[in-house]
Image 1 (cartoon, rainbow, N blue to C red):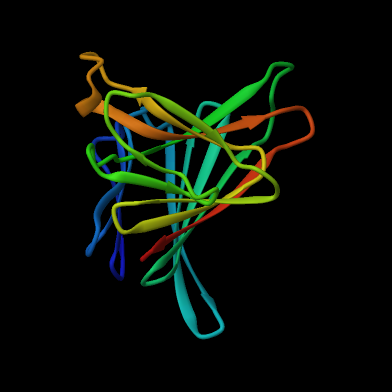
Image 2: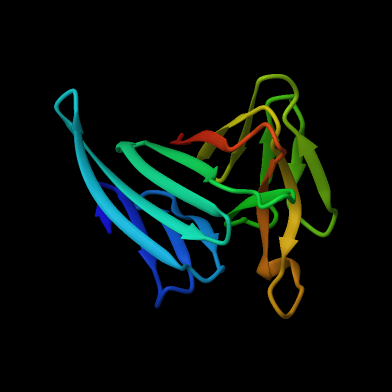
Length: 176
């Protein structure tokens, strides 16, 4: 589904891609999708395109707000008595920097790192995009790696833990 410069795609129900016509691939989720729905809504004269993807215990809504801004909402309805973690896998550009709101600039390479949002809001920037993150989530590198387990196949993961008292995370992805 395309919404202006935003392109949401699912390849045979096995991968969710979020691309921007200027930046290219940003989200690259290789987890099999169980259900996907699309809708449009007009708010303040602007048509917002939304895709909702449900897999496992998590539902993910992608909301194309403007040509340069995408809302991302992760939710769980039931934790079935056990902790649940969501993960937003971001497409990395190995060798480029990841900039954090704490002022750190980390090159993506062989060295792993983990960063937890300090305070109420955090920001991560990479390859011409910025992601505004709420308290409670963290960035991890590398995540996954496919069957080969190589850095080239790894993802930059936004890990979203859902403790008993939390069932929703809202993020904003901006093109910069």
